[in-house]
Length: 113
Image 1 (cartoon, rainbow, N blue to C red):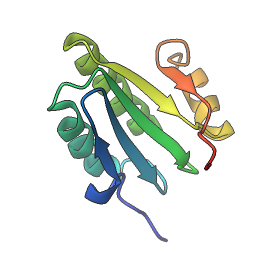
Image 2: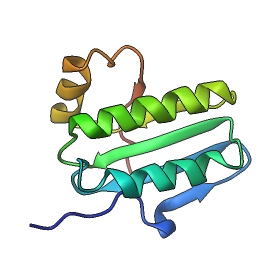
Image 3: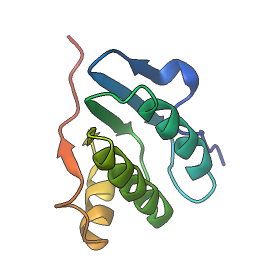
Image 4: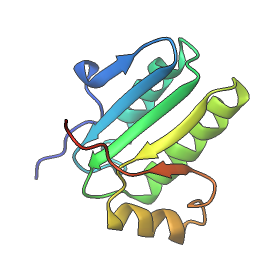
């Protein structure tokens, strides 16, 4: 089974206003620690917005939802807006099941130009 850690360093893009963390592969108990570290690093420059791109994430587990909620609360406390981008149907279902689909802001995936 191939489990990619979420957001390798080259997948972290930061400018003055927006930090983007791209998740590749399943996001569950086995991979959540990698994402936790990337989210903490992405929040360090205190961007106005943190985007977690889930377009390449085929599975989102309950541990990942807990991690995303924790990041949302941390971001909110420092004045950063956290947005989930490109959630697949399974991820949207899990977010709804965990009753956080109205708490975590979502936007569609961006299409390549």
